[in-house]
Length: 316
Image 1 (cartoon, helix red, strand yellow):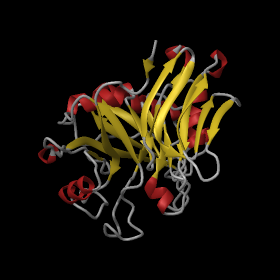
Image 2 (cartoon, one colour):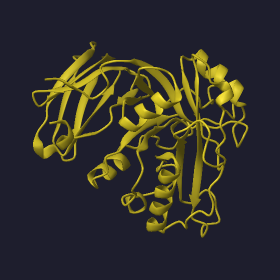
Image 3 (tube, one colour):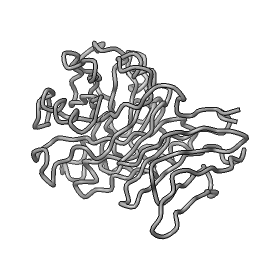
Image 4 (cartoon, rainbow, N blue to C red):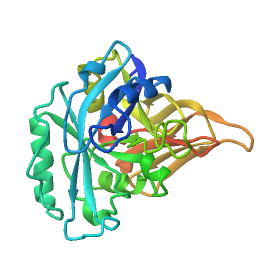
């Protein structure tokens, strides 16, 4: 019997869940961002301006959904040089179009992981779901993030960081949190500020996104799909189907050069295309000892897509 890890029914909607407008330090208005992203095939933007949670529901129509959200900064105030200041950045997505509040103060102190986790729980209790952002850009190590609790997802790829020269690939922090027993999803996002205009080679839009599979493009349905993990993260490649059958993990995708299944341990399984060719499907054995499994696909340009992780106890 097949168990679908991406929903069998519904359609895919392209989403950027980390976006800054002129409400904070972005250069484009929310209206300009909607227009630019729709031209690139996006149906959803979460407007995550700093420290203010504002609804942009006036932008929502039958072909576009504006998610209500904001980004929270908890910085180490002992370091005065901002080039070396460690910080936690979290995106909080409101479960309803109208947020419970615009801002949340006071913030916990950097280094107080118990206080930070209590803060995350307060956000959850208030009607948000919380994503942990760009630990590499934040100069954080496993010491900072391994004990985080209460997040529903973390950024596995942050395009603005990568485009600016900082490693935006955050696979190691993701696996660290998974190995600590956190059943969390992974998101690829732009974190765009559009300091350079759309179309300029230094513009930081249109590089990281998620594809959400859902029955309709309405606020409740999309939030429900996010909370259930009905999406995958990508820089470009497409994942068309993901299911488990007879203790094997099956994937169908766009043409890529490699498909790799990662587990909690050293055991992996991979499929590589012959030189000059591509592959578009694979299947891998799942073992009880794997603890969790996830798949990364890579195309001939080096662009990647990542499935969420799935704990073996939940899928077998």
